[in-house]
Amino acid sequence: MEESVVECVRYSAPCVGCGAQSECWGVHCLIGGSLRWDVEAVCSACGQATAECGLDLPTRLRERLLADHGPATLRVRDPSVERVAVMRVMRAVLGVGLTGVKAVVGQVLAGACTGTLPEVELLARKLRGAGVDAVAARP
Image (cartoon, rainbow, N blue to C red; front, top):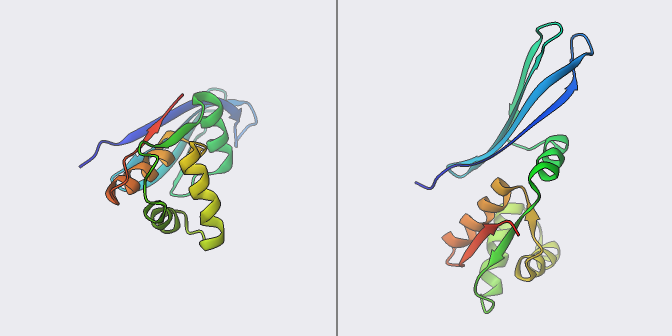
């Protein structure tokens, strides 16, 4: 089994109970073959504690992670890789049609496909499973 990939971010946000600034921790992870996220917040003013979690990463948490850590890039190490293999994986994982997948494959092969580290590592693992030498990397 492959290791889990985790990215965390700490930030402040208004408390849902009293409006004071709460301390928040956001986590995005790749566990097994699934992406998951959670956010926990604790208000030092009123003691309110909240927790959220799910599978589809909320835009606000994704933006915070990218701002804090920078984007990871999907790199295909063999430039002569079969485009069809990359296309199959991207269609299956991202759920894009034939028209949209051509642009995504172009981004992947150009080293321009980016995201959070767990997102990009999931794509790299799927590509490796299809025989494509791919890695998730930070510049």
